[in-house]
Length: 302
Ligand code: ARG
Image (cartoon, rainbow, N blue to C red; front, side):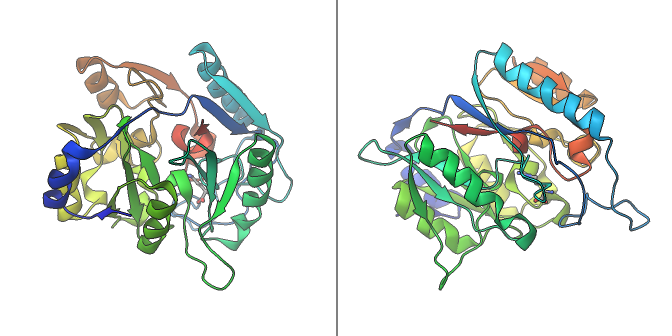
C-alpha cells in the first residue's frame, strides 16, 4: 500500500512504477430518467436558488451523440438501462472503480456515495459487473463506511500503474488507503479546495502519462507541486472554461490522442491542437446543468 501526497515522495518512486495499460471498454447508462430533482453540487441550482431545469429531449439527443463518438473511435460501448428515481445514474463514472489485481483478476471496488440520493445506483452497477465476471470488492463496510466516488475522484495515469486520487468533497482521504491496498497500486492523493470542482475529474483531465489539463485554483499549493512532479506538461485551463457551462477539465482522452470535450471551450480547444491532440467537440449542456460532462457520463472498464 502506498499513498503519496507530496512531490518529493513521488520523485522517489517514479522510476519504480510498473507499466500498465488503460481499460478499453465503455459503460454508459441510458439517460431515460436523467433529471435534476435535488442539488448536491453547486452547479445544479441557478443563481436564484431554484433547481436547474433540463430539456429531456435534448439531453437524450446529446447522450446518443456522445455514445456515437465512442463508437466512431472504435470502442465497445455497453449500455445499461436507466432506473426511475435515480436521476443521476447516467453519471456512471461514480459508482465503481474497475481494476485488475496482481493475479490478473478483473475486479471492481464499489463506491460509498456521498449523497443518500445516489447510493442505490451502486447496486445496479455492481450487478452489471458481476454479470461481466468481475469480482466485487467492498471498500466500505456498514460498520466502517468511507466515502468514495470511484472514477469521479480516482483517475488512472496512462502507461503506469498509478492512480491519482482527489479527496475532500465526495471521497475521504482514507478511502485511498483501502483502494491502494485492494489494487496494489500507488496512489498520489490531492486535496480538492473549491466546491465547484468537487470531483477530481472536474479539475484534472489526464491526457497522457506526461500531459494533463488542470484548473489550478481547485487545488492546494502542495497539490499543484505534486501534479507538476507527475506531469511534465500541465496545461492550465482558465476559470471561464473550467467552470460551468463549459467544464473543459471534464474532457476525456481515451487513447492519448483524441480529446472529447464540451463545445465552446475555445481556448482549451486551441491549446489541445497546438499540443498535437485532436479535440472532438460534443454538446453536453443539459448534463453540465447537473454538474457533469463527458468524463462522468461513461466508465472505462477492462
Ligand atoms: N449530479 C451529480 C452529482 O452531483 C453529477 C456527477 C458528475 N460526476 C462527476 N464525475 N463529476 O453527483
